[in-house]
Image (cartoon, rainbow, N blue to C red; front, side, top):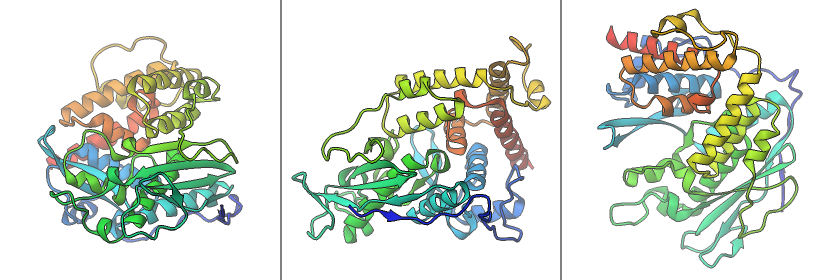
Length: 371
């Protein structure tokens, strides 16, 4: 297979990403949307019932990814949820947004990233490097190579195709089915290769099937994801099983465990397995240096602190309690999901500094909504 190499620069000399100026520019230090920004977001189709936590997590996601919501590089899409009785908003981008992030991160951190040839699979299980039949392929496979390690993903057509009520494909899924499913596979592979940088935002192609009806699980969790060892081609019809728990036990710090948690979740690991990884991550966080906690976090709830104030686990527990109380006061039922979209890890694994920062964003958003 041909590997497409991506040229990289020295991270010490690579320029920082350039952001557009003006009243709509998203600054790295802002904690809430400005009135001008909020007005434009609402004109783009975001309704008044959007939750403050969804807006806050979207702001943080824009800051973390460097994508501009006002040039439509990233946007919020609302879909009605029977469970919540309202539109629930999900951040989305296009595959070009993923490529921009991957190339930017590679340029800033050094290393390399590239692709092997895209493959399409027929209904009989045969793989092809070009898709010529008029009938849509059954699946597509994309392999991203980052710093010599292969990250492969397979997306099946039936799990992602956007359809009319009668079951027929619509839009680009009817006109260019091979290209659409290849984009889904590429998004899965890129998210495996860049788990922190792409956590919490999905491509429009991946989420297209959500418009077919309400789904309980994200689309990417139902796709087949294959993680391969460096420079070793995986079997075409076989998934490799990784022992994420063993890797987590050997991880050097909590950040490494969080990355493993994200990879395991993207690969469809069950909840109890993810909980075990989260417990390992909390242990690693407790071994680290204590994080700074905003004194306002202590005043956000009633009750004494348990344990040693210098213990980072106790600080995180305090910050989590303050965050949940702030979310309750702001009537935010989707706190856990919003936090994970913003920071790429569950609340239970987060350090106190991130919990405090998100609490402050919720309070700022709630205060602005009441004005």
